[in-house]
Image 1 (cartoon, rainbow, N blue to C red):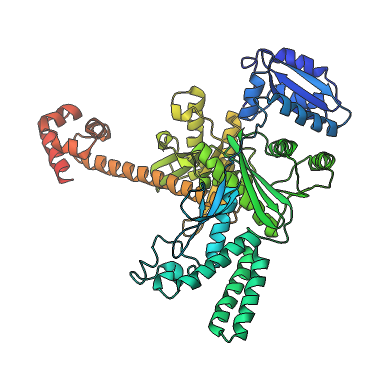
Image 2 (cartoon, helix red, strand yellow):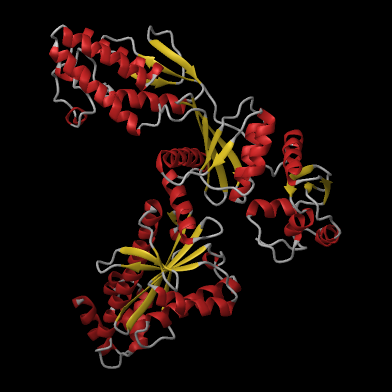
Length: 613
């Protein structure tokens, strides 16, 4: 989005002031007409950074555009170094809480693990503590950690999670699928006594409280004792339980002795709004999780840096390790700030593989889920658009996507379909259908050129609401040839919009994305691949359906021209006037004669043909 003097009449003054600004590091303080501080930023070079806000032709993200539109004046504070600017920025934001800076609001609450008061107790994650005779473990500040711990313990110790009541429902129904896939011990079969089952529940509680290492140590002692007492059946069960805990420890994310004090941070966005999640490990255990709504999306690197500064400036503790889902530019400076504030070394890194990459992926999933609740979109839709933007190298998430497909039978009935996906969902009110007008012989490239030119001619003329929106991404059902054919059309019309082709395999399934000079595989981006496939399938459906309708209409029209004195124009007038076959069949001979402008004999013949169709 471009800022103009119509948007902000103060731009000439601001540009003139900025041209005289120092090139030293420092902080800039943006103010509105009421002299209220609306944004605070830092810069290595004040003149270059502030100039970027007011420069002619500068393309801004929506959040920045709104901020610049409201800037009436600004102040600045020069510092000796970029590090001092960073510290000052953090202090000023904390003091003034400007409207357009990130202001953290988390999702905190308290949670408990409940061991139900039943003959055969269950483990449950709950948000409140009731006076119901149950045993409660907690409170915990993280509902996320509680849910993960309960799921893990139920899985490791094969505890039932169904709605059946025990012992009332013993042997009343067949065991469910969970027992057959070894996710449940099968209490419903009645093979476990109350005492035996209670012992297993205590082991699960011990596992939650003390971790896998302590659980394995205690269970090993019990197994050895059972062997010495010649209770080999119990010893075998304990052996299997130890193996289950060890196997779970290899992949579970709740207890990991190799992860001491670590915070894992991820930021996600849907092109408009952004959220961050922090997953905290303390002493080898998943300790807490917090999610924050960051408001309107800005530059991803800057948002992560600003979040880290604000998040830790208000904390009493910072771990030695901070893992990020994406790299930042000022990592060394931020590490220096945190080291001086907390008195110990802090390492900020972005893992590329292994268990730490899995943890950043987990944090990203949590941020996505939290954002989906805030914006009313599913996490799959948000993830798909973000993956697509990253795979295609787009500067922003494509909120509004248009896709085109050509359909024809040889050189007849050549048509095109246009579908629109907004925020990852079909927006059918903006779908369009095109009848090819300038291409007489089958030529998909020429047809696509005509369609794209007509679409953007309508954009400039503002004749239709569906054409008045500039897409964030254009997709063409075709390969590199289609992209290369249409690119000159966009350049000639002055349209700057990312465009790619959708390549299909021999079975007409989406295979890759064409760039005009090569292909981009989306195999590793499953969410983006599924979205692109859905778009390609939808545009193909629209185009082929319209082509079939046109073919049927033309065949119908051709039948009518068999009557002497009835040409294409008269046949077309009948079809457009009565619109449907049913309406045409219900028309009288007099109405047909009057509409087509033919005599009674021709009208009678037309009526006979129509009724036979």
